[in-house]
Length: 480
Image (cartoon, rainbow, N blue to C red):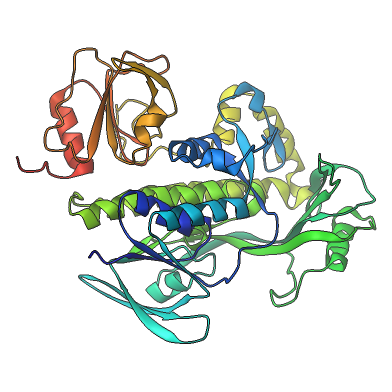
């Protein structure tokens, strides 16, 4: 039997990885220190590309009707989403995502162990031996093919692997939560000390979502529970006004600095999610970046376990996802530089506010952390290469289908739009599907090869180029 992939961390990123591995028939053990789910109502944004990922996997519908977030900002300078209808964001409850992925990964055979945490590991050429402490304090060892640290910003796996992080920029401290009442009005803006937001909930509950964010300000130690009095003090510092806040439905404190792991791989150990990258949450898309790590890593690990991974496939995880993490951190730091200290950046904000009215600037900022072109794209390649393929309708000899339906199988896909049955995938049939369709609106290319993670690997109509791309991403053809 194949040794499992051991995943430290049972949040959305770790569970997404377990789910993805399960789709590929690879066993996973998930070690989660928490014994229960979070009881708060943290909300994350699903960008349209992540919505595509969840739709392909038949996950999106199970999350229910997710409302659209009508606006997006860059450093509290508001951008124009009306010009980019395809670049929408949905608001989703992170606990709901976690519960769904736990259920679906378990159905595919994942072994989730709550109250278990990694305390050490050793690795050799054949696998990883992980030391684990269970909920009763008893220690045991677990053998796996690989170990993935998806265990958060203070990752034990990252520390044990000796992977350094680069910490940059301002520190931040804030409180976020829902409250039964608030004696102020709607507010969302930059203040000299940071950012304050008060948003009334549009439902019968009538709650207020309040958020404070201060820079270069030390918060209480994590061991101290967050209190309403602490929040009221934060509001007074930011706004200069004393406000009364009702009973909390939930609230949490968040602190940190921007940090990016120097590398995402150390032998048979990998990092994903906040273990790899961490940045101020008001920059948004942290959940998108972390779940993107899981999707990018899973198919590579499955290829390695399955014995068909080409040379360098696992190393490519760091190359691609470190770039994505860097851009997310870079965007977050740029946003903080636009906010604080306010008295020194007012002129910059005025110039920036004018620049974002330029359509291309607006588009680039909206998609800064979500539309990352992977660096395997070469000079002169089609603009699609290195980017995720969107969802488009296709007409085949068998009827209507879509790129989403084809990508939902978790395999590579050759989309042949030439009308002449182009593309010989002999030897790769077990790894790559072929979809022959009529030319599609919005997809002005003859044929394209797409990886299991939905990224376009090749565009063209020459067999030599296709064969080379198949070898690069799907290994040597099977013997016939």
